[in-house]
Image 1 (cartoon, rainbow, N blue to C red):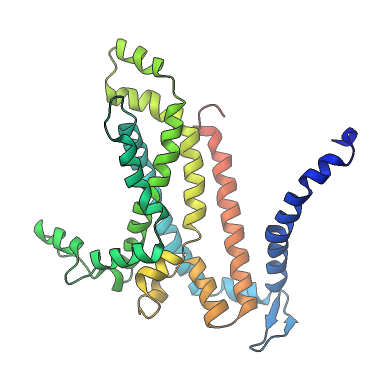
Image 2: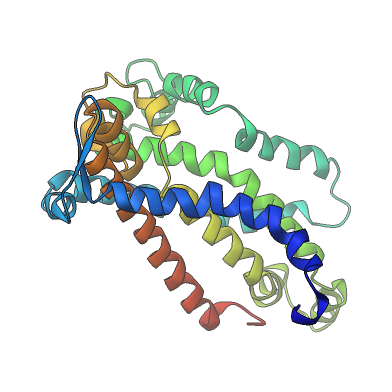
Length: 290
């Protein structure tokens, strides 16, 4: 671009300005605030790394991290399900395939509050549909959204359900790039549909699976609205089921400790960065074509 003059820079200037203002500057500002101590009525004093020292000694950090990791692990279980469902919807001659895709995708675009209202009824411990179904097979279901541990699992089930449609759409697009001749050749060699799925579909779909995994992990570490809407702010189990982002919200907007909340935000930022870097590092071992 050096020999093209100033024009290339003028074209990318609006994009660079937008990224700088709305992405880079907030990160730098939050990093600075994490080194300060804010008063209730405003004003700050430089505190160094005191917020980080307090944070890493706070049991709430490890509790919220554990809940977030549990939520992420359960939601990631939706990816193999999405691969299988996307493969079924890609079968030649399947009627109403487009309608099925729309139905699976609707939960992803639905309002979290509306989704939470429906699932709160399903998870109700006394008359909920889930416990009623479990009772039919002789299982006594817990009070899902008012029991520690079970509440996190309940929220994760909703997260898995709502993210399934997005994963299926991305994976369905990846399936379109697999040459049908490969399936025809495998069928001529006597390969069953399961063998074709295991030896052709899954390996050639790994780039799409990798993309969906990255997006799912990042969004799972940002869990807040679904947790808050399902459990409710007055739920006594919420402090034991909080995510990292809810921990940040509680300290910054309920306890009004902005410096401490900024330190939590920076830790979340670093965790997501480290996890994403590890995923990119490991992709060479299992993603085909990389």
